[in-house]
Amino acid sequence: MKKINLTIDGHSVTVPADFTVLQAARELKINIPTLCFLKEINEIGACRMCLVEVKGARSLQASCMLPVSEGMEVKTNTAHLRKTRRTLLELILSNHNRECTTCHRNSNCELQVLAEELGIREIRYPGESPQFETDELSPSIVRDPSKCILCRRCVAVCHKVQQVGVIQATERGFDTKVEPAFNLSLDQVPCINCGQCIQACPVAALREKDDTDKVWEALDNPDLHVVVQTAPAVRVALGEEFGLPSGTIVTGKMVTALKNLGFAKVFDTDFAADLTIMEEGHELLGRLEAGGNLPLITSCSPGWVKFLEHYYPDFIDNLSTCKSPQQMMGAILKSYYAKQAGVDPEKVYVVSVMPCIAKKFEANRPELNHDGLKDVDAVISTRELAQMIKQAGLKFNRLPDSEYDNPLGESTGAAVIFGTTGGVMEAALRTVVEVVTGKKQEEIEYEAVRGLEGVKEVALPVGDITVKAAIVHGTGNARKLLEKIKAGEAQYHFVEVMACPGGCVNGGGQPIRTAVEKDATDFRAVRAEGIYKDDKQSKLRKSHQNPAVQKLYKEYLDKPNSELAHKLLHTHYTKREQ
Image (cartoon, rainbow, N blue to C red; front, side, top):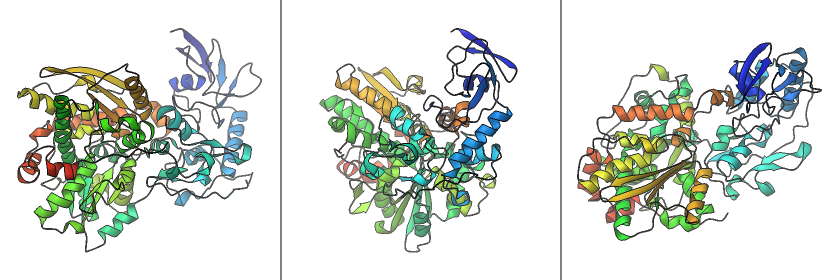
């Protein structure tokens, strides 16, 4: 590609011709403040924080949208620019709910950081501060318009990345708001609860529904036997909330923290991930042998399942009937475990720690219960667990390591890779290939299904069959794939879909990183590295090798897809309105 030479603040730089001035400045490690900018997602120059002076130009220019040109001379730090940026930020703050000390994003707010960096000490332009009603009807997401700065980052993610498009800018001028059409609640539109809008929001206009009080109340109830399960992606992200590098595996400290919080038992959702592979793998084999609906599409991601129910209901029969690992674990805890522990199933209270806020919606689905008992009683995000640890006064980084409780704490490396895109597919292949061939496979790392490419296609020999599979992450990519299948342009046996870009490691409930941090580091990839490292360190790396799962079938479920297994571990789906 053609190269362009320019100078920024007196420093020469050569960059590709398709760069913007903002990109060129970051090549020089020059910090131009931004607020609405989100790399490759929202590059609209709406906030004007990134204004720069360009020699020969008659006005200031938004660097996030300004293409570089040969010989361009740019200044990013002049008295005029500093004054202009402060004025613009004061105007944004003048109409903002500035209750910073009680805000969910206090100390992790891009607006707050920018105000400090620009030295804002007073607001000279008091705004009207209109009164907005907070939308709290969704089981997963709270929308607080009083905090919204109209950056439209959430809108861009919802429309461009996830291609759901349930929020947009409404009204005009001073009355502009970001909301669903017709002032509806997020609970009244086909929102899939993925929470990618929360990850995009620079302030607290969007946040998860906080269920920590609900969990504290359960822990304080002596009549309840409160147990907790943790998802695979939590262990490689929780440490970020305590200053540890992204991707650090903190499983042992996390388990210790949970025990100190008062949970009777701490279990690993990875056990249920291994169980899911047994059920889903045999479901795939059954469909291949009996000519069932193909492709079989994974059902682990509740945001994806809800997306399909709303937008592609014709594919409902293609979804695996398997519950997600979270729900399988809850069902086993309130049946098999309760019996083993001699506890009344009605007294077992199941809490899940998840990277995904769509799990809050999933836990409340009426289909996900058995014998009148909800599979899961409460779901908290990675961020909410961190908050509980801080509330309890625990010094996380100083905690010793502990082990999960048995019998449902054992898992394999195949289970932990569920936390990243391609992981479910790889875990399934490790088991299905051995079940079909009856031969031990030494090469079990399926590199072809790994990575962050939006849509991956593979053809792999499984016995006498060549299994054609696809892996997608982000519902925008899922939409593209389903359209190809509908048009007859692609045929597969097995499809893995995760609602969030990158998979669970980038779930809506994971630690929030700023736009600047995301520009410098792909946290999806870094957290995934931690996931694969954990897999490599595992003694057992195939789901069917899990002795606790083998024991569960021998003592209780009989075999995969048995009558009892279907009652506890499988479900059905619902066609929903768009």
